[in-house]
Length: 568
Image (tube, rainbow, N blue to C red; front, side):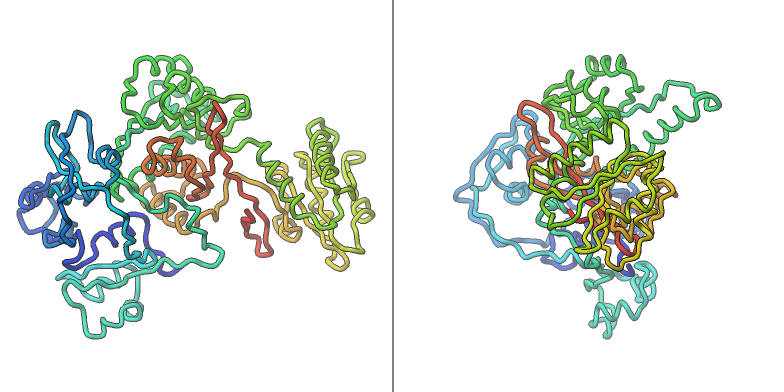
């Protein structure tokens, strides 16, 4: 939409650089000859801390570059020091660990000790304020993007910078009728959500919650950098794997960069597993995992299982679905893909809970898998006293339209057809036959356990007409504001649109970092609730003495306009 011109960094900086003496941070225009080091020194800062406030800035910025600096005029209401505690910093202690020990904020410790950076030297004595009751702060309106007016600003260059017209700027900022004034804070955009894009933010536990907890992450992927590839012979298998790996890596790096720019402290190490169990065994025995908060990867579950058995105190996050994942349960293994039985159960529960005298028609084929699905679903329905069930299977390799006409209920007019086959011909017969039936005297809705390869060549128009409903682990409208921002960031950096594996890399890395940042460990973070990012819903449960299991499933339904709607 028109004013959605921003991604995570712009939103963060817009709030951070709000103007005025009442703000902790203000903008500063670099003078000729100044460097990040000299600017930091003049203000009693470390160059590293100033760089963290201005990610991506050169050590020798050009004159007139605008950066963010701490506001030396900023002050809060004076606080009593009568109940302070004196603490001697021990080896490896950080502001974060001290703040957790005394249950006070990092900002409170920094303020009472006049600390500008985050580093503490061993043996230093600091004051720690007594724990205080939390005071509710004024809410920041994150739906607007603001800009602090500097000397060089004009309506013309602001309209170009933020891709707005001057009339739009005036509409959002009526005070501009009297002209721009130095230091004025103006609105330069809004994040506007369409009704279907609005999400219950109470469930998005980690939305824009950045802490100063330092994180040490290892990402293990099968780059196979040591191998010389002969793509004339290996193109189909090896190049496909290389594409998956590089795309996943690229998406993950967007997540890391985004969170670093928002203030998160991340140390990321990349390790090539070579897609080899022997290499992984060697790494697990020789690599120094001291202080590592989580391992992202290896890509395939068998390799993730191998490393998780060797480093039993570190969460190992397996990002890709495996057919064998239900058979694997290790205490520190985190599976970031739902098993197929869970997805099927998701749909079955939806049908049972929503049933209201509909005619049930189960359609399958003669394969063992289909026969089993029919038997299981029929049994589940009958257990819940749903008995009006008809079963249809192909005869002579196909299903004739007349067979559907014969069983479709035209009296009560409500029919639920459940597709329990992976056969392309049967799938095509069902959709084509039902999708052309006249609406008069017929209300037909189609359900299935997936939308896989058996739907290739099937008309989406007919799926929309039948309101086809199915479970899936990804939904392209999961969080459309985040999705649009991610797509824009990715294309700006890599000049192509992201693949599904790139989106997967972003979602897995972003969610893992946010949960680790907001909890003492991943197990605690996994228990804190549901979150949604670009395509993925992250919802975890912990097996007793076993793996962290992923339960993030969407129930999707085709709409008349051919778009998908998430029902759950």
